[in-house]
Each structure stands twice: as structure tokens, then as C-alpha cells.
Image (cartoon, rainbow over all chains, first blue to last red; front, top):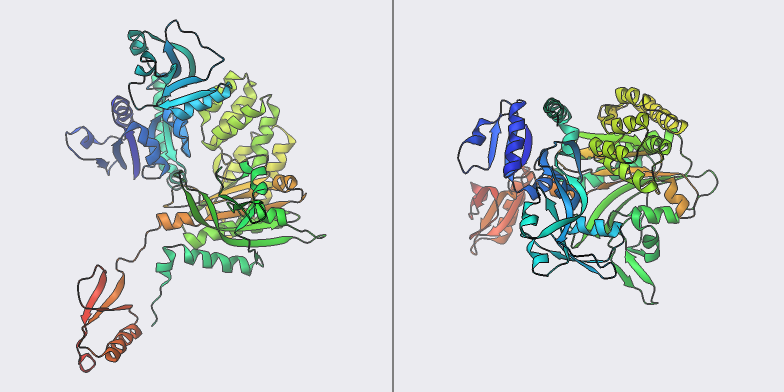
Length: 210
Length: 372
């Protein structure tokens, strides 16, 4: 039996669709209920939905053998897991954004508002810039508008929110997409099962041209 | 019949520690006892060798900065005194003080380990690897030991013109079996196609020792890689007929800090524990850094993980709960308890009343029980 942690929300639904198409379906999952765990003994899978930022934690602690998590989460929390595939979905960019028409004053410490303090710290230390971090949990875009921070480090998908609030991308840090991850120990003891699933996903991605 | 309490000890990892100790003693390894603290300088200079950054420090009466030991290998390596052809075979069971895996607090962690310092040949390699495998076996028969040779991946990286920082990045991706990121990095840094192909293939070179060795042969591009592979062939040749052979795997995705480690490295997993419970390898480079040019190999077992993931198997706290009241004759109560114990059951004697103890059977002492 493979325990699979899926991220709640749009990305998770897309991922489940892929799993369904390659033969790991679990019809129960589409029924409306308050159940947390969905199992299909025939296909040997047990799915559960968790908060997207928690997928990596479930996998690292072995509660899930495998899971799907955004690269942003993997970069931020650096869990000790295998990153087996790039699923090529949920694509976006991690970027520095700030108010339009403002210029970066290099001489001064930059205030950065972000949900991803580790990614922000790593990026700015790689370019040797002194920063102060303000950690927020949502509506990051507000920070520069209200003057709380100079810039933000956040995920940018289409850039609509930024544009509507008179903000713009200043620098792109890294490309983000959903990754197929596995617990290291599970990989040793369920090698054949995980390999089979990985191969099927890889074939599917190839077919779809992702 | 005496009750066997070993299952209860096992829950805390104590039985595994005892088994490992007698295993090491039977191979002629001697116990190494170290002080609780060392001079802070030792750890400061080798900070990246340690798993975590944080060390508990304090000043001694002369104003010297000391540290509660976060690691044992460094002390053993530093204090190694080698005379001529003599080698040191040591093992330890020590508490080390580290930042907890979750961070934010210090933890006392029980560690068992083994170190060999001296000339290393095939015999030594095989002995240490088989001891590591047998250590895992004391924990669970369902274990896997992954073996790799650092010379293999670093030999391949030597051929590329990547900067040191990029090489470190590749090694990290390798340890995550992250082939797609290696591919992206190779493209970004314009690595030659024939080399990048091999780098991308490396994470998927794992599995059964014999087959994987054959797969790995196709990746060899220089002497360093050839030597690494021939050392692995040598080990396989010796260990293939030994008992742990079926649990040994080759996996080139295991890596470690090249400034301390070189040569053979390995990691052990047992079913039910989500991360590696044993980790080890050859660390000539560390010896070099500490000013004792010597060869060395060793491993450590993280006993604290056992406590966390192997739940107490007993469903009850005690087999029999024997209750008495104030009126009862104490001597008779204790005698009765001993009588039950002789039948092989554990007995807890307690005054009658509410209790949270989980017991298999409850016996209320009655004055005339021995007549019954």
C-alpha cells in the first residue's frame, strides 16, 4: 500500500487526475464526504489531502511514502526527501517585486516582506545584500503599498495582482513547479511500487509533452 | 519460567545497544569513554562536519571556552595516537548534545558508533561494513544498507569545468535523486553533452549490488572512477556470500561533505523509521585536517530514533495487579505476589482503590488466598 499526500486545492486536483489516468484511481475521493483518508485496495493506494505547505512534512516524517509539493515549499523547508520528477504543472516564478518606478537604493538595508524567509535570505546573501525580513502569511502585496517593506519575495503566476496594485517584478529568482517527492526510507522498502508509479507518471508526462 | 523483559527494554533502544556492544566486543573493538565536554575550538574549526550548527558552550574556571560534546567522532579522531602499524578499533555509546531535528531546542541524543583508525585495506572495509549491517540487524531484520563510493561521483565531476559551488549543488541534487535539476544545471552551465548525460544518469544507478556495478561501469570516464568501482567490486566479491549480502545495495545518490569524507560511504535504513538510522564512511580527509595523517572509517547509529518510531509493544503495564487492604497481613500479601511471579507473570502490588494502571488480570488479596 502506498500512502500518498496530495496538496489541497487546484494543484492537488490536477495531480489526482494524472494519478487516475495512469491507473491509480480511487473513486471514493470524488464523493462528497468529511473523510480524511481515501483508500483503494485494488490499486494499492491510500490518498489524503493536506495543506500544500505540509505535504513535504508528511513525506519527510514517513506518514506519506510519496507526495506532490511545489518547488517553493521544497526550497523553503529543505526537507530530506527524494525529488523524483518535475511534474511540469503549477508553474510559476519566485520573484522580487516592488512598487513601479521605484529604484533600489543599494546603500541601504533592504526591507523584504515574504512568506518564504529562507528563500529570501538565501537569495540576498548570494548577491551579498543586507536585508531585514518581515515574515507574513498572506496578502504580501500590501506590505510595499503601505510602506511596510521596500520589496516582497513571493510567487508570481500571471502577475495580475501585481499589476492591479501598481507593483512590478524586479528580479526573478527561480522557476517553480510541482515536484513528485518520496520519503527516503519508504523508497528503500517499497522500491518496486514507487518505481512503477514514477515510471508511469514519467511516461504520461512525455505523452502530454510536459 | 522467567519472564523475558527484553521486549520492554527494546522499546527504549536499550536492548539494541546491548546487542551492538557485545557484537563490537566480540570483534575486539574497545569501548571509548569520553568526557562530557571538549574545548570549543575543536568543534568551531570543524563546524561543517557536525550535523547542526548549534553547540552548547560554557566557560570553565580558567575562562576557557568549553562545549558539551555534539559529536564523538571528532574527539576520537583528534585523540588518536598511532604507533607504527598499530590500528585503533574503538566503539562508543555516548550521549551527544545537539539541536533537535525540529529545531529551536537542544536535545540529549544517544549515539552508538564504531571507529577504525589505521591502515585501511579490503579486510578492514569489509569488517566495518559487515559490522554496520549487523548493527542494523540487531534493530530489525528488515533493513537496507546503501553503499557508495564518493570517488565515483567526484571523479565524474572532476571532468566537468563546473565551479566548486556548482559541484556542491550537483552533489546535493544527487542526494535527492533529483535528475531533472541536474539536467537544468548542466544546461545552464554548458556542460558537455556526453558528461551531462552521465551526471543525469547517476541518481538512477542504484539497487542490487551486482547489477548496479555493471550499470555503473558504463559511466566510467577516468581512473578515479575506475578505482572507486574496483574497490566496490572487491567489497562485493568478499561480502556476496555473507549473510547480510541480500540487504546490501549500491546507491550512488548517497553523498557527504567531500572536505571530510572520501572513499566508501554508507547509510542504513530500517523499515518503520523514515530517515537513515545509521550513517558512516571513510574520513581520511578529516584526519588530515586534525593534523594526524591517517586513514579512518567508522559509523554511528542514531538510537534516539528507535525510541520514537518503535512503539512499546506491550499492551499492558503489568500482567497482574494484586490489591490489598489495610486489614491484610503484609507478609502474606508479599508472599502471594512472589508466588504469582514464580509462574512467570509480572505483579504489581498496590493498595485497593482507583488506578490508571493497565493490567492483564486483577487479583484482590484475601486473607485466605493461600488456602484457595
